[in-house]
Amino acid sequence: MKECVVIDGVRTANVRAHPEKGWFKNVTVDTMMIAVYKALFERNPKVKPEDVEAVFCGTANQAGVQNDIARMAWLAGGFPESVGTNGIGQQCPSGMAATEHAARAIMAGEGDIYIASGVEDMQKVPMAFAMEFPAKLAERYNPAELPMGATAEKVAKEYKVARVDQENMAFWSHKKAFEATQAGKFKDEIVPLEGEKEDGTKFVVDRDQWVRETISMEKMASMDPAFDPENGSVTAATSSPLTAGAAALLLMNREKADELGLSYHMKYVSGVMVGCDPTLMGIGPVPAAKKLLDRNGLSVKDIDVWELNEAFGSQSLACLRELGIAENAPFDNVNIWGGALALGHPLGESGVRILVTLNNIMKTDRKDAKYAVGMLCGGFGNANATLWQNVSK
Ligand SMILES: CC(C)(COP(=O)(O)OP(=O)(O)OC[C@H]1O[C@@H](n2cnc3c(N)ncnc32)[C@H](O)[C@@H]1OP(=O)(O)O)[C@@H](O)C(=O)NCCC(=O)NCCS
Image 1: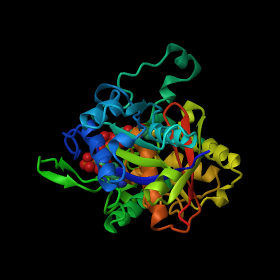
Image 2 (image 1 turned 90 degrees about the horizontal axis):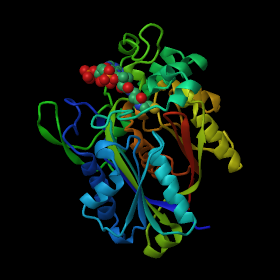
Image 3 (image 1 turned 180 degrees about the horizontal axis):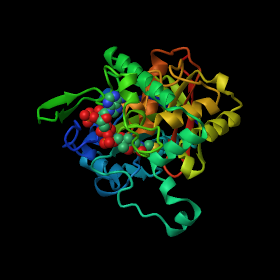
């Protein structure tokens, strides 16, 4: 088998998917994709677009402007028609699935150079847009328990995650993301792109919009539940916000990278996709991580760095506790530069975004880390986890 290494990773800033306040409210989804694809080639001049074997792109809601966005954006960007593209739809893990497909193709020797990408604009294509539930699904599950917010509440209740612990997690997610932003940690991964403020003033967006400079436990404690007004514990502060953004990874056969004289830090070891009860979809990273570690003869203690997509504070904490990684924030080796509660979660983008960030954490703050895992849950009970190894020495 060949080895698949990460040559580079970039993303747009993650911005609010809000019709007035969103910094990319007038930026199209393909514009975001083109920006990240172009950046990969500009930053890596030894790689030409025509050398790419194929482009995978994850998008949770493949409708409207996000329909076959892999092909649309690639062609709209003026890239070669000869390169194949493939849109991947797997709800939130779509971007990670795109990465797994590309890595496996490299390992199988089908091609040397692939782009794995992900994109979502939750304003232009809202969650569950044009989605129809099969009647038989409603016989198997209570439809009221299937929306994401309802699953976050159910996980909070079944796994006894207190509201204050969820808020404490949001507090630390913002604090770490703000500190990382201030320290310029995301500079190498965010591709600046023109956006606009609420008043229409144009400006270059080079930071994530949702990250809060100040966050108050008292304010969060006063917020109304977002999904269950009577008995709920999940609020807008402990949910990942509606977000827009795009991300892309340049993946390569290690021999090809060496031949081109390109440097790299981590390689893909393996990945899993698992399923779980869709009414408890947020718990999916638990079976995913367990299967991934078992398959590779590793345990939780062997993993130096974790990136867990924070869809909701409740499900993230339940996963970390069930896996024996941590009980409460702040965490030492999980979401070191903050997570989706602060950085945002543009559904199909996040599986790639957390790997772009993970690669940079491994290259800078945790240079000596040997193994890292990226994982995320997904609507209707899919979850993915991928294992990465430091090969820089
Ligand atoms: C929870 C949710 C319904 C809230 O949506 P919303 O009602 O439109 O609310 P917003 O996110 O715009 O936030 C409402 C207000 O609370 C504020 N707020 C949020 N967190 C806050 C915090 N920690 N401290 C202070 N204010 C906060 C926001 O800033 C906003 O006010 P503003 O517009 O004046 O800035 C929405 O974000 C959501 O559905 N999230 C989950 C998405 C999802 O399911 N993803 C898939 C996961 S699997």
